Image (cartoon, rainbow, N blue to C red; front, side, top):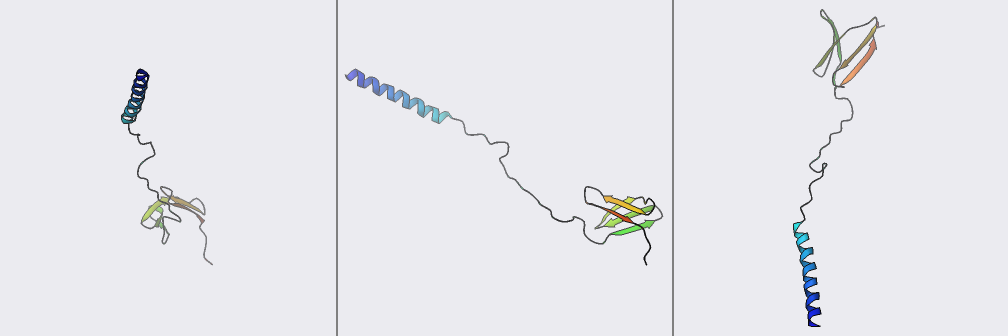
Length: 98
């Protein structure tokens, strides 16, 4: 009977030791690919603001707004141009003021 009690005690100690050792050896979790510091910027409305100037000079047509300039060609009475990087575009016609 003493042997059986000693055997159970050793078995319990062995199981406890294995569970404790496994808990101690577990590596820390590695960060996922999306963990970290995040930032976001939302822009509503036009980036370019101010007076639009359409100028016909000796070297051709150009448009300026908010210190951004683009050059373009007029086809007939149709005026079309865009500012780079998705900043905006313009479509219009040349006419006379009445």
